[in-house]
Amino acid sequence: MAGRWQTAAMTSLLLLPGLACDAGVWRAQLPVLATRHVVRVGDAHFRFDRLPEMAAALLAENPGRHVLIGASMGGMLALEMQRQAPARVAAMALLGSSARADTPELIRLRSQACVLFEQGRADEVLRANTLFAFHPNSMHDRALVDDYLAMLNRAGAAALIRQNRAVMARIDSRPLLPQVACPVLVACGEADQLTPPEQAREMAAALPAARLEIVPGAGHMLTLEQPARINALLLDWLRTL
Figure (cartoon, rainbow, N blue to C red):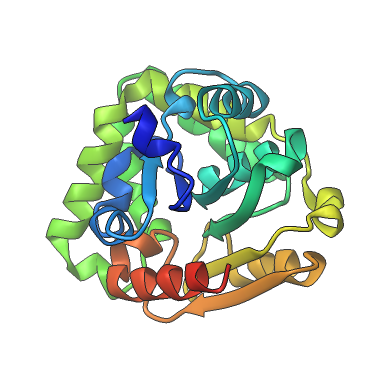
């Protein structure tokens, strides 16, 4: 795998899942992207407690330059990798993400959720959160919602707590954005309630080389809700690099 990962003739893509998500969040993208690129899925968010530590580990474990494709928390992690090693980041795709720090209200809500996770009430919290994670039309797809919940439950309460605390502790990345020289794709679901389109527009406006896409029929989990659209969008964007 190491030799293939470092093959110069192909673009190396590092996919960064969102909070408590694993490779399952990229299930529709992996087979398509892997036909044209060298692809790896990061798991540092399960192994370290803070975004700077996660970013440093990914940079140490994956030599060379890469295109970072991050969903939600994964986009925040991509920005931290860009902060630490801008020369190592060839391009970034930030999907359903934000450059802002958590507000006091969000920190309060996440802290309350962490208490419930500690009490063994993770499934209750996660099921309630699907109303914010998905487009209203997606809520009718029980298989999709159940698959998403199964992925988060695989992570377990301890990981949910650690990763929420990591997100709460992140810094405001907006001052970094004007200094980002690489191409950036900013995509957001039209009905995203967790990182709303206004935050995507804010990032795209501040980035020197950004492309903004608002994805119809998607909420926060746009890779799962609109897989064909996201695949086409990523392939088209990658061709422009």
